[in-house]
Amino acid sequence: MQAFQTSFSKHPFELGCATSSFQIEGAADSDGKVPSIWDSFCQQPGRIKDASDGRTACEHVLRYREDVALMAELGFRHYRFSISWPRVMDAQNRPNAAGLDFYKRLLDELAQHDITPNATLFHWDLPDHLPGGWLNRDTAYRFADYAQLIAKELGDRLPRVATLNEPWCSAYLGYDRAVFAPGGRNRSDALVAAHHLMLAHGLAIKAWRAVNPSTSLGIVLNPELCDAASASPEDEAAARMAEIERNDCFFSPLVGRDWPAPLLQQIKGAEAIRQPGDLGICAQPLDFIGLNYYTRSIATAPKTAEDAERGYTFVPPIGQAYPLTDIGWEIYPEGLSRVVERLKSQWSLPPIWITENGVADNTGLSEGSCDDRMRCDYLRSHLAQVQQLRQQGHDIRGYYVWSLLDNFEWAHGYTQRFGIVHVDYATQRRVPKASALLLQSLMRTASATN
Ligand code: FCB
Image (cartoon, rainbow, N blue to C red; front, side, top):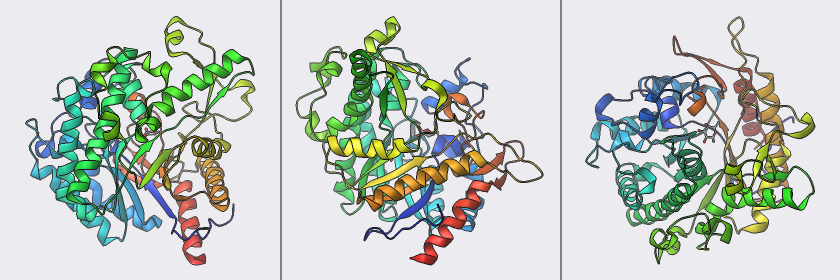
C-alpha cells in the first residue's frame, strides 16, 4: 500500500492511536484514586504472567504532556483513551475532583496539540468497592451515575464517547474463564454480568443524553469471526455457537432483541435478572459502533466437559497457513473485512470505527531503534482491508492502532508489547518504532492528498 486514501466518502477519515487507563496510567493510589478490580486481581498470586501490576505502568499520569507531544509529533490528530472510573469517583461514589482534574489537564493538552479525543468510559477497571461487581444489578445504575458525572464535567469537550470496551471480555473472561478480574468461574455468572453490562450501557447513554444530547455516543465490541475447523455439521454448529456467545450476546440487546435460545438456556434465574423493560433500555439509538479486530478463531465441536457447556472448543489454526504473532494470534487480515461483512448481513449497524487493531511484536531496541517489521506488515495489510471496505462503500470512518505505547497487557503483564512506541519500563523512555514512523508517513501522504 502506498498512500492511505481518505477520500472515498464524504466523511473525513480518522487515523488515530488508542490506549486505556489501567494499561498506561500508573498512579494507582494518587490523588484519591480508589482500587479497581484489576488492582486487586494483580495482587493475587498466579493471576498475572510476570506477577506485575498497574501501579506504575507507563507513568502516563505523570508523563501525559510528553505522551501527547509525542502523538502530535507522529502526526496523530485523533486519540482514543479511557477514563478510569475509580480515579474520578471515591468509595462513596462521590466525585473526586483531583482525579477529574487529571482528565481536564489531559484534554487541555490534547486541544493545544489539535488532537481530537475519543473517550471510552469503561475499559475494565471497575471500582473494587462496588459489591458484587457486574453480578449486581446496582452496578449498572452506579455506572449511569458515573456517565452522568463525566457528561457534566467533561461532556462539552468530548465529541465522541463509547460506554463500554469489549463487554464480552468483562463478562466471560472475568466471570467464566477466570482469566480477567475478578477471576470468576461460572458460566451463568458470565451471562448475568453480560446482561448487567448491556443494561449499564443503555442507562449510561440515557443519562449522558439527558445532560448533553449532542455528543456522538456508541459502544466498542470485539466481534469474533469463528471459522469451523472442518465442514462437519458438528464443527459448523460449534462455530455458530461461539459466534452466538461472542457476538449475538451483545448485538441483540443493542437492537432490543432477546438472546438466542442457547444463551437463555445457560443463565440461571433469567426471569429475575432480565427484568421487564430491560431490553428497551439496552437498545438506545447509537451514533456509532466501535469494532476491535485482531484475529479470527477456529472452532470444533466441544472437546472437554467444560466446553460441552459452552458448545465449542477453539483450536489452533490448522496447517499454519498464516503466521502467528508473538502472543500466538494468527495474522489474518481478510478477517477484518469478513467480520464487517458478516455483521452487516446480520444487523443494521450505525457508522463504524475500527477502534482497535494491532499486534504483539516483541522486537526490542537495537542501537537505539526498533525495527518492528511484523507490526509494519500487519498494519499495512489491515489498513489495506479498511481501505478496500471503504472503497466498496462501507461506512467506516476511522481506524485506531492499538497501541500508542507498550503497556500492561492484562493477564500477560508486561510480557507482550503492542505499542508503536517502545517503552523502557526501567527508565520510562519512549522510542518510536519503525511502525510509528510508517504511520507518520501514511498520515503525511494522506493529509497531502486530501
Ligand atoms: C483488546 C483490549 C486492549 C488490549 C488489546 C491487545 O482486547 O481492548 O486493552 O489488551 O486487546
